Amino acid sequence: MVRIAELHCYPIKGCAGTALADSRLTPAGLDQDRAFMVVDPEGIGRTQRRMPALARIRPSVEPGRLVLNAPDVEPLAFDVREDGPRIDVEMLGKPMRGIDQGEDAARWLSDFLGAPNRLVRVPPDHDRVTDGETPGTAGYADGAAVLVTSLASLKELNGRLGERGAVELPMNRFRPNIVVDGWDEPFLEDRARVVRAGDVELGFTKLAIRCVVTTVDQLTGVKSGPEPLRTLAAYRMIGKSGVAFGVKFAVTRTGSVSIGDELAIEKWDETVEQGS
Image 1: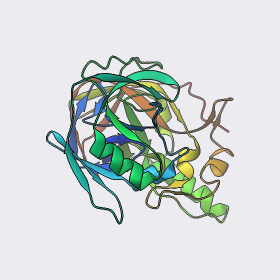
Image 2: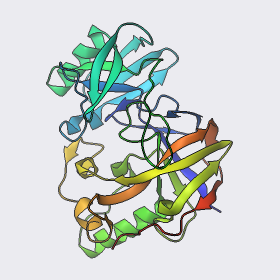
Image 3: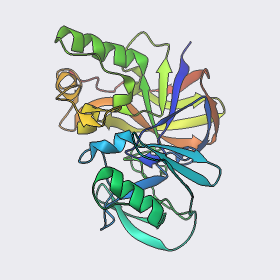
Image 4: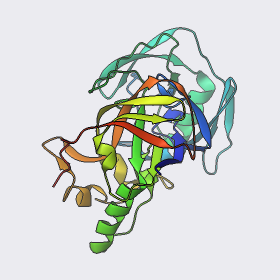
């Protein structure tokens, strides 16, 4: 039986995730997922592509509050500003809006990251429409509300890494929201088009084309070489798009999900290219 093995929420885009036992699934994904984003003084969103040290920041969400934690610094807890003046921000070239979270958060992030930064939150009237096969919405996530990976796919990758004499990698390199266990065959998630778990439903948007963030050690915040991109390029090239690992989904029915929930594939696509 295929089940949910892991759930992960990333309250601040690019920062460390939080492992969950269960979560409410909103139209924008797991509750609070990518609801916040670090931006530079011009409002351009920071990511691990250029600022891998973001991975060392471990935010935690409390009712109405956010706590910023990182090694060797005092944590900062503050009240979340859920409404107020909107400012223009940009996420991977896409114009959006955000609510600034104040001077204390800006100072803490600037000091830890060694560059001027501010923290913004998705406003209540955030009306982003995500693209792909199934339209949906998301906070500041790259492409869609939910990223699904499978342990079978990671096992296949790590086997190939071992054949190259490379070190096996943990799943956190791919920053998934839902990790699935129970498939013997890798990359079956590529073919899932309608997925149900608990009382929620997900619709396929696109394969997750991976970038240099997968080369960042998520514990140290340090880029650590060409893997896994080099190995994935040998068998997971999807046309001219790049290498794929994981699948992005839109939320088509909200509800709750928990570790251990059965994952039912209501519709498959038998024509998906599996890479070469």
